[in-house]
Image (tube, rainbow, N blue to C red):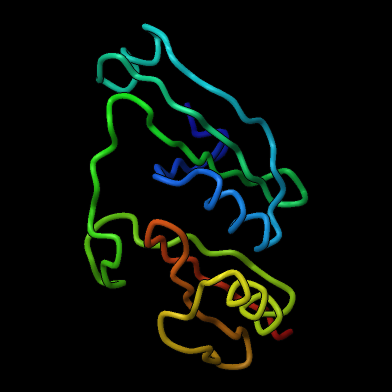
Length: 145
């Protein structure tokens, strides 16, 4: 038996509206959204009394999705929101974009900035990291070919 696909990546956030706004500005589209609770979710996540609101944001082609989750109960715990890129664990999400400069400009206009700077990798990509909501590092890659 083999994996069929990566269905989505889950990201727990404190401010769901802000996270949605960031990813929509990045160019993703809002998909399904709503509350989730009940015994089944308690059993799946191994916590009691779970009540969350989730929102899926997806790439325009609908193939790749993020599940943004805000916990109402139990209260979410906090990791270091400005952990550096070499911290162990899930550190970043990378998106291919058609214009890295324009994308960074749009994100700066709503209060997000580069972690470092935009750099060129050979003649293949222009790359950068942006510190997004909840300290999430979002990598952007513009293909040069």
